[in-house]
Length: 327
Image (tube, rainbow, N blue to C red; front, top):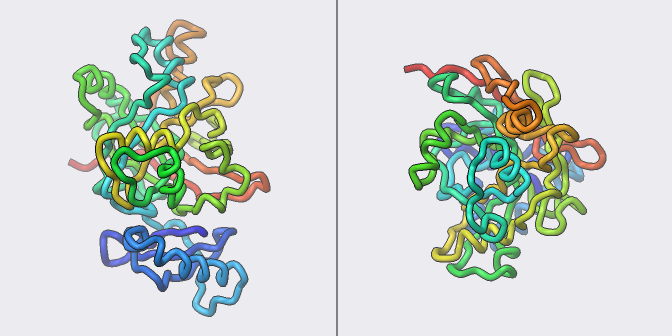
């Protein structure tokens, strides 16, 4: 099942079901918004699935063409957005490049921060930034949306809590990031609003790519129309269940919590490219003694997309332009 949120006269938009080929959609009958569906998922999912099956079979009378430019992020706002760092090769490369002391037990206990979730960017919305000097960087990553998760959740409970899978562009401002991290609290200024691809998918839609606690598909990233990276989610070190268990260690998570997997990375920019500029710069430092690639400028664009084994888009694309925020 594939779900999206279209613009409406409310901030949370209107829930639609999208066909598997992302060409058509129909307004969901069981719930007005995605959060409403998540709040009563067990009761409403069968009706949503039945409507989805009818849409794919071509038997829905009120179907219409799906226009991703009219889509908000699947959850335009969420009760909680937690982002992990589960691709250890990414962190190790940057630590080596910039002489950063390794975080103790980073390979045992996931690193995670709580980001802003009150206003996600739409997948084709321009991304506003105050100053190019802040080091504008994109970050392509996978994420999941959970149902209710109890405090102290077990691995089995975490596995059963996944409702949807997302594709994200978790924007970062690199010039601000290290200062905030050195202060011992999570980033605020270094992490502006995140954007998500237009379509959220249930795990079964990923077929064999939903395996081993990971999304085993490469993420295609293009910067200003030029291929930048295609690292695979199969390289993830911590499973999604491990991230959920970590997040719920001392508190319960409510339905609609989004948990990100962190920048997709194989730690091999020379072979598969990167899902963010910082990683390429780190590789350049290791190879040449200094970074050669600059960060984004106003007017630059980024496109992030995942294709299945047949070459079809799974989540639709994130296509954004970096612009200067108006004072």
